[in-house]
Length: 112
Image 1 (cartoon, rainbow, N blue to C red):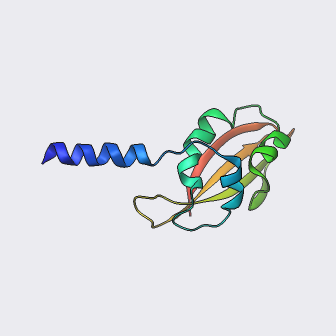
Image 2 (tube, helix red, strand yellow):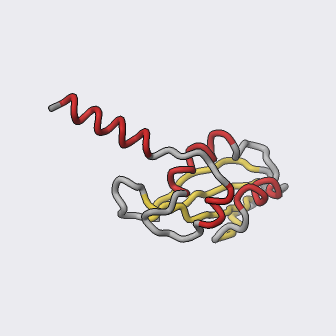
């Protein structure tokens, strides 16, 4: 029984990752539970959204953010990415922080 549970967890986690695809990203700007953005976010954060990247380069990757905020001297862009495919409860957002010169500082996933 333990073996089956471990296999289920491994298979579930492996299926939650999808490579970033700009066309799919731009077509799925909603906050639905089946939004493929959630599954692309890990690849996007690890391989595309690099520290020091310009705000223009991020725009060319992701298009217009849903929310733009200024917090102290930072610029913050927020994109809806749907909910965790395994739970479908709370909506998640990809949050990207830029410094005052428009260079990427960090990315994070927030639950709202």
